[in-house]
Image (cartoon, rainbow, N blue to C red; front, side):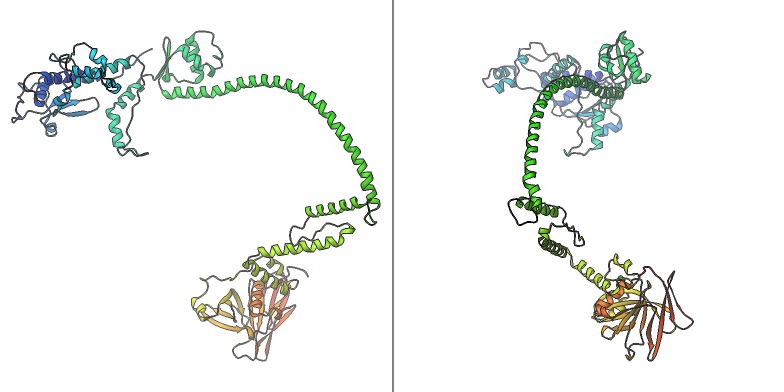
Length: 627
């Protein structure tokens, strides 16, 4: 199998810069801490510049003439100095390491003090011999028994080890343990600094991803093969996914794996076959294979369960069948004996009770018929309970026996009264008013006007004109009178019968005819003599007023699309229920004092209102119902 080299940054050069024996930063720091003389953080920085100044990943700033006491100017400028822009950012006491993820500045102030481990070996030995378990656990005896000479510098003794050296030794032990295992690393990314859920700081996360080297690891990992397994392990795990390899493969392992991956549909760029292993490049390929295996497991489990359940149920069925046959034979005998006994008892009861009771049913109550009569009464009451009327309009009632005619009539009346009372109790005030108006309309128009049946199913409304359709000035002209009903109408002139659009308003005292904002006519209910309407399906009606009333010009001819509703409202408001005349053929009305007009009504195919040649108003209306 051909291998492809992957370019990546080797961090060993940085590790050697920090921890190399005798030349690394940690070794120089330990040596500076233990050397005799006046050692300081600046002398440590000076020694770093002398020792590792030429390292390509080490940068310091240019030395200033005014250095602190004890900080000597380096003999040469052979080490790597910062450029002009970097020198403005870095201080005199700083140096910079060029890590693979970015540049990091280090300030030498306090390096020596923090590196000095002032707790000597003899003190640690005393603590290890303490009777307190916690103190003994804090100080490791193996560290004290280690006689190996520290390799950081030439000046360290067995009595004292610096903090950096201890950290390096601890890190080396940890790496030794990790290298002996097969560790799996989990990178923890801090989403935000506020410790809030569901909040991701993109800048912070990018910074962590960059400096943890995750992108470099992913690039290297993707360039190689994420999954690799030996042929026998791969074939043993996934052989159930291919009919050719299931349940057993007879042949070479490599041929079996090749057959399996071909059946799974692997693309050539997704995998490679080596001498003893298969290499899968993309995790999604392995995930798809695992998903297919999980699905296949359910199928295999179902087959195994089906086989076992079939065998188990067959065995159980044979046992149950044998037991059931024995139980059924015994139980059938009991049931047969019970049925025979019940038939005998029933025959005796029929002979002694029902037959004799039916023969003596018309005689006075006696021992021969008392049970039969009680049974007849009970049967009627139970039948009545099951067949009671459902509502007030339901007039059905079971036929009672002769002995219960009077009781049945009383029960029927009580039931009807109860249903009426329950129905009335549920009626709301609005629905009660609606029913009262419908009853008034029924008393006036039922079997008298053709378009009455069409109005029965339509509810009467409080008004046919909304507030926007009424002129505010017209409403203001009503004064303190409360408007009860408003409807658009067509008014016909008394002379030329010219139609004009008007609005009819009903108040508590009068009927008002409006033209926009102008009150054209007001008819007091006390002055209203009567109302005439035809028996056809037209919407014309005449309001009769006294001819000697100077305020009125004559009878008013109006037409409404809701004539049944309008006349019912007028009859209720004016209390003129008995003053509505339904005429057939023609209606006479007063045009002016001493002069009358006539409206002729004839049935036809469509509604036509026009002035006839004889000077009458001719109305042709279709007949909707035959009476």
